[in-house]
Length: 423
Image 1 (cartoon, rainbow, N blue to C red):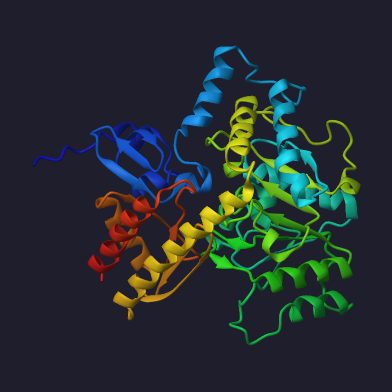
Image 2: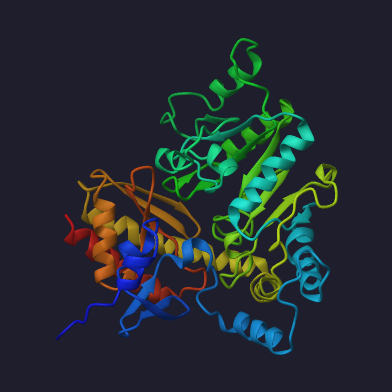
């Protein structure tokens, strides 16, 4: 059997060296449906990456695709800045009826630019404006985006170094279990806040991920999140939950913080809110924080109408009965966990631990380079899986929420083989 090499010349000669995912998956993808992608030569790949969490409902979901095609064929508005449109109205009403009201969440909805880091920047700006302070506290191994404000509250040294200038007004604190349970939660943080000689400026806000995706699938306990929320309230700081990758049902509930019972002051949402992989992001905040002046924060693409259409269809299709979607995601997550347990038992000397929630899981290796080798072997065997963590030491599983049990089993078998064959 002769395997033709894909023609990657234009990417290698013309596209910037900054490209990354394509280096681990050296082929030219041509089409995709559900949880499968196909390259130009017809090779099939099972997708355990789902657009870094942007495709919770799979590639080219037929219900969402139909809604989008119908909208475009009737010449629906595709670009409208922040003008009022029928597509925006439908999304706002549906989001209120199916997401906010059933959870008794009082949030106002802001449309910043279309990407996750745009949502984070608007959240940080609003928190500083409301509190009149500049400092923001983030956590070890956090990732919040690649623009300057977001990088200032991101932990990864490699990504921070790319800024080229000092990243200021952000202070890191230890994430849950950073000291392996040897130090009480928030002891250091609270001591600094109350010590007039600590040098810590009073923060405007704290920003946190309930599960750190890029940081290595580090899962915060509900009790830790509740204690953080109480600390913020006691110390007059706003609590921002970055739900860009873990929201839209990734951990089970629509918002990842629901399990802990907290109500953050500000929430950032992006990735799968459009449902179809179209750029879209939201900044949600309590009504009393809505002190923006008209046009004080804007952007040309802050009203992506095609994304509103697919987002509305996704909410109507999957969240009209949110409990069913949540139950399915948790069941699929248990299936993944059983698969990871089996891999750990087969490779006890190699795998350090596995961890996750819902349909986001990570497997950490003692040999930090092993995750990359296993991901590469998985690709050769027809499975797309990525790595995360500060040294890319964690294999990261992020399949679509709509993946079937059979597809999960298939992918877990390939993953087990990739791990074994890279020993």
